[in-house]
Image (tube, rainbow, N blue to C red):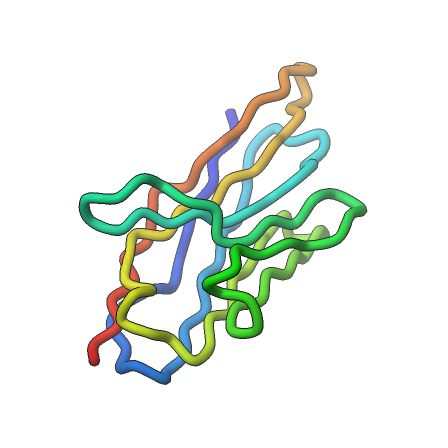
Length: 120
């Protein structure tokens, strides 16, 4: 069984920084893409940043230049460094990962979500 566990998040003032982590564990053979999404109250879940396996990272326009996605493949972990936070960044942040497990099943997994609240 595979699971993603997120950590980080919390309350920060506008202009501050936070870092989210998401660790994958279980019967993993290979992790392909990893990424971060967010969902604000009353809005649909939207892509924040993505890190394809062996490919270039990409970011949603609202976070370009402020957020950085990175991966530690040895730890099966993806990070989201968020700088210059704005109140409109307030949302629940979810990580996801496209994983091939040791039973040769491939699917998309999601983390449990982490609340990020930015006060003005």
